[in-house]
Length: 293
Image (cartoon, rainbow, N blue to C red; front, side, top):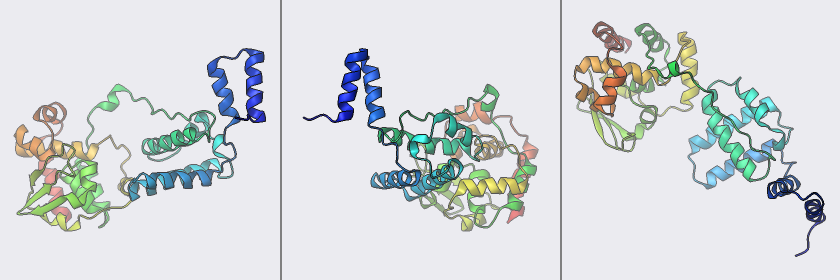
């Protein structure tokens, strides 16, 4: 096999400088780096890669939106190899929903490094959270009322599933796996995290919300705008599910029944949600949903 002039140069350096195997590999990578690949070209290649690997249309569209936003901030004229960990981290800190976008970008940069569009990997580490960030956070009834008042007709069904009933985000998004009959919401196994079907008995004031349940596009962005419109500044992690779980535990006064409603163990329910809200606050919470529609 005939060696190229560049390969012969690497071999020459090995003999002259007695380089280690690691240094040899780094030298080889630098020589064979595709350092002129434009940003927009890399985006289209990656999206085609995702489509070929049968990723969902929603995931591909979400990825396209995140990468386009990064391109606008970094500059689309720069080649992919100009993206470094330090530069990307500094821009990512200015994004809304930074943690969601961090995971999307990490997937892209891992792919780009394997394609040798980058000479070094871009490592996007999640921000370290203090221990008090892991405490259960709930929304007050005043905040729930503000959300209901500000919510659009398109989003109210999703808000009811997530905040009114306490479904997980994935469950509320898979409306094709949900069914309402005989005054009950049936969460199919395909939607449930535990892959088991469960039945939730609805309160009389909740049944009409089912007519508003529909697939919601770009739900993260819509929820961010709803929170801003309602004037809510602090939004603890999973606060809609935590809020609903706390109130439904008060409603049932039975950990086993509440656990069946939420789809997890009574032990977890007791450890996380007991004594977070009072009985009176729970009565006011359920009354809000009766008044809203």
